[in-house]
Length: 270
Ligand SMILES: [Zn+2]
Ligand SMILES: [Zn+2]
Image 1: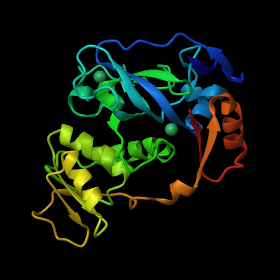
Image 2: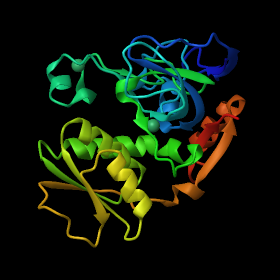
Image 3: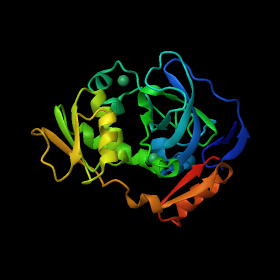
Image 4: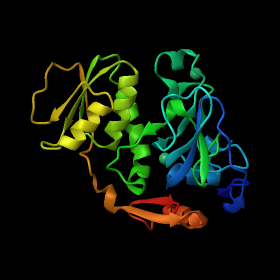
């Protein structure tokens, strides 16, 4: 497979032909369709102090949107053909006190996509199925990729809701979709509030496990213990994405460095 590879901090990425990875237990093999180019990638490439110990050589990229092409053992949450997102958190131990209290992001042994693990500046990637998200069908690959970082922002605010049982999620966009899946997985009861008339968005919220979905103008069926507000769906990010083919990843990073782009750069695959 073709991949853009970081050989050492401070150097440019090189286009290389790497063997296709094979999914281990609990992992999915993903054909990458798009991968966001994030400022974090630039910090890793520059060897900034807080991100100075990446796996090397490394395939950068932690905002991956792709299609599942293969499954390792013990994966029942996804099947071949599913469209998934792979975020920054790539693996946690599942055993420490942080992991067991829903604060996996603090796990001492956590590994990160595109830092400790090869990421999405490549045609194929493997990812831990526990951390993959379903991508809403109405979000094209290009528009979904930047939202995987937005999804993590939602994830942080979600953690601040403590152990609230009934969670209201307002503005059912992609970040909200991601948080809904996490909350339902944690056993919360999710109530999704969308734009009035967005029957499709409401149906999708229910499909992801929301107990109830309706319009923001609706009072909802029950009192809530906590609420999270997200940007409304179809945010302007749609018009602020610039696509680059894989071999131009260095250019995508350079334009991020100089600030010559207004939106987010995304690597796309045909
Ligand atoms: Zn990022
Ligand atoms: Zn842990």
